[in-house]
Image 1: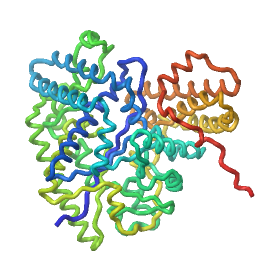
Image 2: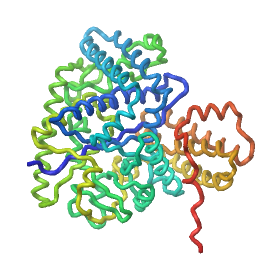
Image 3: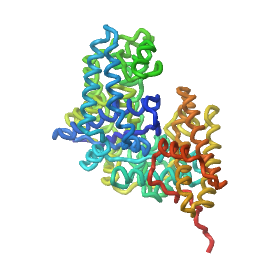
Image 4: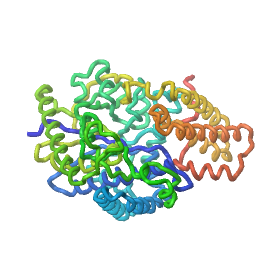
Length: 526
């Protein structure tokens, strides 16, 4: 007899990296995510759902910025040529890597064929899986703003939530009930703002529940209900560590593909320039294996697809058996209450960071019936749950340190006052100019620039120390555009028409955006 359920939860997100000019590094992020993560995920989900012996279930958050890019004709129209470019570059692989290159070429061809089968439209495929009960689609913050640091002015949080809900409904045809809170970050009172926008459940890191008041009777293995009538579920580290940790988990297996060794770094710059790539950078063409522990990057062995495939099956069996043991132990401790284990991950862990990840998920779904492991979605587990314990969740995040330090430190704290000052100015702009029809165009674009400025991705990059110049450039770009639009409104001097059209063409997300989140709050006086 099966004991309890496993809820796999993936968070699909990318910052809005649309550029009018093709070939940017940021655009590579989008194409690589589609090729390596979202197309394989859809492919394996569809195949598993068609197998009557399997019962896959998955909660998947798709952020509004990712939705906007998946629906964008400009970005999606460039994807086939982007893949073909990689296919041609693969022909330059060194002889000792021809086997791995041939395998990768087959994968590129298969995903390109799947893309064409879908006619480049991934969103309807996700919709269909939700209608089948396989997927539970969640929203996120409008631009993945880090909500605890946006709570003053309150309109910033309201806008992130309300615009996300409306954008989700626009693209997916249904109002979301669940949300992946950006960085799983929570502050006291956020639940009431969520509930006001119709959002009813979310995931927090374990300490968000374990430090709740009162402490939940079942810890993280049953949902709780907040005073604002929102259900929260807690991340279980036992179920997540084997999957996300390259040091202690499956992705670090010696035969799996090495992430940091890329043909884009190994080829001479002049070869890349032949393909209109200006210089060395990761291309998603990785032909080396992780190798033994402490193996230097320059000595990584060639990748063997056959060895990796055998390891995927072994790791999937190990994961399924581990979750069954865990659930049975929990069931013996919880009595009549059926345990729920929640395992949340970034979606791009599967495929982008861990190349074999999508095949691992497919193998887990395939192995689960044999071991009587049952899957559920967050929405389904709430529909099936008895009354929930009332608890006040604790402020928390799933970032390093568990609170807000990763997004508020010496590397990125300078951005927080910019969010605050621009947020206050947006409120003043709407209060002053919101009733003028002829000024709506400028106000809406100013709102878009403000939302894009608030993305937590740039703070994350500044802290992680990767493409920091790019992150600073993004922040300053949106601040400069916001201020120029705001100054034009306050001075009644229209900005240059060509400049405005170019900004609108590039930062074109949320076409139906309205200004209600920034309207002055109604007076409480009689």
